Length: 481
Image (cartoon, rainbow, N blue to C red; front, side):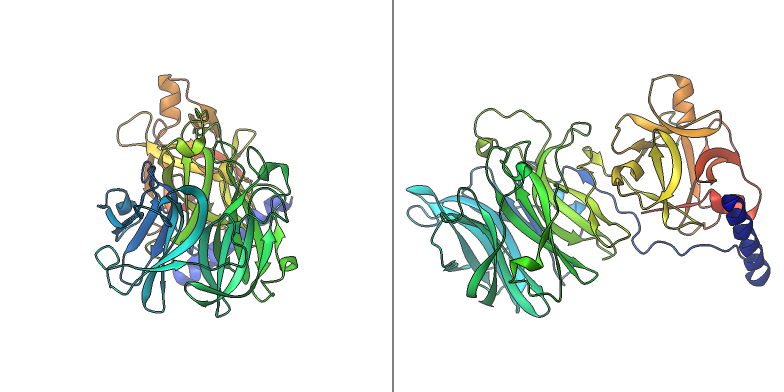
């Protein structure tokens, strides 16, 4: 009864809008429209970092397999970084300090100058690794001169790496990973305020250490902190466990107005937020950073992983970590939703309902429906691929069940595995049309083998049905997000 009343009310409101404005009632186009990439972005590039600058360029740095130099590339688009020429901006010292294990460079623009934070060991003791800083005042950091500002002085002169910097409430912070023999084996996450881009001030605070089983597989590790802020919250990701298929992302959260130097201000998620996925063939996702899309409307997760699980020997000697992107989504409660590391190739999107903008197409026990608050993000993500039946059509492939597609069966829409038959290919192929209720921003999907029938929701379930009324057209219109 409630659903019937809801649909009747929607129809009445739509009719009233049509009478008063001459156009159907509709939801506003989403604030964060779809953005897609083709992965991987860069092979044999680990620990990626991307900085979006005001000059219209994205600047990209990463660890190279030889651990002997710092490379950089730039492009006006994120995808463009995949083919942008690469420049070596700094090379390890031939001997002594900064002579080995050049790891995890990050580029930042602070007070009108460029800074690169990186980790380095000694040529005669490669595990004596510490954080260092380079500075350049050139407009283009790829062609400019770099000055070594030296090692970041930390109270503990121990194994330390993965320095990053960020600003909250006008205060600049440095965060890094370090071993403290008094705490025990492995690395912890530390935080300190900064008095200059290469100097900390005051005593650091340890805000996270490996305490959960998933943080201690193969190695006791918290490292690679990265920060994103939204809705008055500070979210810090970190990487945990050994750098093989067990590598994963954890998450710390604090209020932006809290005393971030107080460890009690930070809460750790009890489970990893991003980890290996056998179905999509992605293993050991980690050491991430965040950036934004070209239009500034979408947050982008940048990370590395491998496309195989088994590694021979020390994973640090395996060169095949790849830089990858995918869109970062946000739950209704304001927390980030990382989903799963998606398959190589084109990244998936979500489809929100035109007339119920908080509801997304998703599968539940393989039945397709629209639903709000889909926290199992991958259930509501689909890759728009070339139609299985060809003829200029598209098919919608499940993100977490690769090889499974939205198809109609008895005019109900399900997610099923492609069995290779002509019937399946036709049932899973659609003509992508301009939205029937919003031709400017929306999208509708017309059945290939039943022209005139579209994917539409009815009582929250998806069907392939004919459309004739204003409400029908609204039910058959979606926004790609």
